[in-house]
Picture 1 (tube, rainbow over the protein chains, first blue to last red):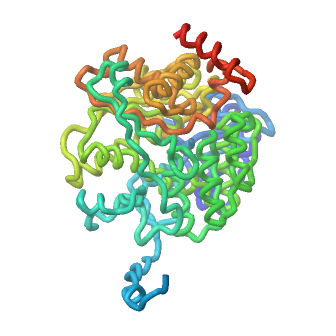
Picture 2 (tube, rainbow over the protein chains, first blue to last red):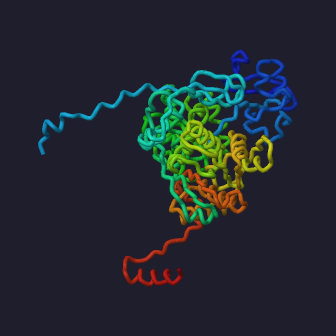
Picture 3 (cartoon, rainbow over the protein chains, first blue to last red):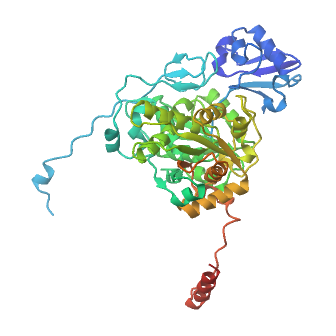
Length: 91
Length: 430
């Protein structure tokens, strides 16, 4: 299933400047794995060595925090948007 | 009276020329890589958070030197992330530390104080501290537009500080914040945007806004500099206690940053030899309707589980606190703990603080007081303790929280015969 993955500008250097890239997979984890395979320099920045998300990098599926939808196990559908945002403190 | 030559012959010495303001370099908290100063908060290599790096060989002032400086948070400028002289918000900080004997008796501790940031200048919350740092970071980088994602107090602070600096401010808040916090922001001519969603939605949006527009969003891309302002709470507590430490500090937790910066601040003063002894045990308080950090501490481990906030304490309603893990670590490693309190308890906490100390706090203050009482009941606070409660925002910002619980005042005619029976009946009742 093709989904769009939106990256923060700090990661665009690893995709040849692209901020939005297409990825395929049935789950978010598979889509992230697809991105990691095509852009190896991105891989360690999106997930740890076991393929799990870092606590300080948030993934949003159609603007919803994926931790409310099962994390990397969340199913994705054709046309979904995934947004990667480093955790930022607020207040 | 004529001006004589003797009166004009000795003009005051000209102030020393200001040194140009620059921001300190940054270092990634996770991978340790350093980078030059910039309005970025995220490591390009690993996406970890960036913290400012201080010159370990810099000359530090002694207590007497600090004591002679103007009463603002800039008296601790050697521990703030700049070189040169700040240009804006020079009059923030150094709020009162109030001894609270009635509250100490209620808590069952030896002594208690309230660090009273309800009277912080200019926007009546401790967010003036972080914005003072953030707006000077914006100055150092030549940014003319600042902004924030906020649960209210930060919105007020960014709006006020930007207005008097002549900067444009874009402030993003959840749409349903308390009226006082909305009006207390828009009155400054701020470009205030109310977002349908929770604070965490607003925060995500602002991360994208900062990335797209290059503004100085103080708690996003200026966050490394901004956060350092919170350390001044610790510095002031130590100085105002007579250059010594309390045994425990209780603070509210939203993003968790204040707890981590309290720890850092006390640690830096210990390292500088300005104070001695054991760092205070740090305790955090949250509303039970949004207590992801308390639950992380109780659960153990280091995986924070985000929550959807359901509490009247909007100022602490951050369900996905980015500094939550660090805050839990700070509490564990100092021997502290945390407490979550119900909305009813936090309202009672506001009234308790008003009755015992004469301080009117917003909802976060009620959480802090109620949390301290819960910690005392659970024997986390002890009879020999000297405790400081960090009260971070003024109650006029969240009138809605107490409107239904404060007694309604009687209405009478402007006649003595109306007031006499009223006084007699009230005195009989008391």
